[in-house]
Image 1 (spheres, chains in turn yellow, blue, brown, orange):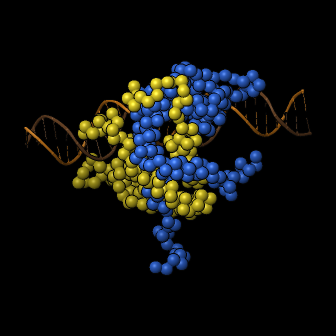
Image 2 (image 1 turned 90 degrees about the vertical axis):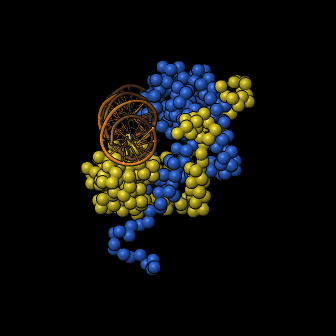
Image 3 (image 1 turned 180 degrees about the horizontal axis):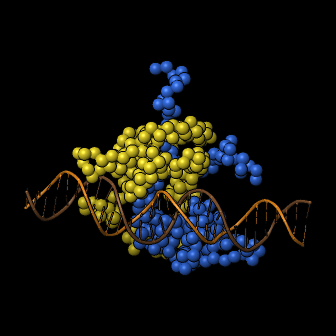
Length: 168
Length: 168
DNA sequence: CAAAATTACTTGACAAAGCAAGTATCATCC
DNA sequence: GGATGATACTTGCTTTGTCAAGTAATTTTG
């Protein structure tokens, strides 16, 4: 199985990192902490976390194709597809098909959507401010730098699965 | 331009941090990257990400109450409730109600569950090793330190919601 | 230019997240 | 010691995640 085959003895302590120092779990736990107050903020705004991300992306980057929005907002395209309808119905975004390529759907934030986002800008800034105050400005920037770098890693190279992707 | 900042224009909204530098979104994106190879590993292990976290927690901390497991594995209690049945059925964990408090449910990892975890210890270590190799040992440790500290922040103090908790 | 890819979404099916409400069990307080 | 309150889950319901398939609109090719 493991071609690396260093240890054959299954009974000796598995080389697991404590969950507290496990990268995936740490990222999850850290996120829960920062999302706490943000969820409080959103709970009385009428939108959930995902819709908020969509609005933030559209506000920041302007009208975009669904695929782009999905990538920016870290959503699957299929999830985004299913939330566009309701968001249009709520008047938060508008949708149009560009005539030059009718496969695409471009969505844009509406004035109402923008108003919603702006209505929480102050509180949002306050939350970030509290995080920065407790965590330290420099450490926060450092953390963001590290996370940004981490996002750029290509962890698939060399894996068997990479072949699948590489084939095409 | 003057930063006196008393414009009434709503369009000059309080500055949001670019989504690229948004802490919640960065944590999400970073996690997507590291989960890639881990999902590959789990896909042929028969357990999903959440069940894997439950097993890891039980393996590391021993038998625990559901609430504790949920907190450690970063799962909602209701989600955990719904996965315990299947996991017991699969023979990965066992469940018992302590006679001294019959409200509780204590779960423990079974030998089969432990075997499953150990069976992937090598591959898991290899994945972490690849991350460490590409990202750098020191930077990884630094990131884990920062994330660990972030988890300890109490962001609720001073918020209206804190009152709920403070009422104790 | 018609057949064969490719692209950009959509839809289906099922597990899991998230939130609200409900149900037993303890624990407390007159 | 029975009502009140707090715990520790459970259950219901809607939305989202995830993966597989499907569809319509371009592009590319022979």
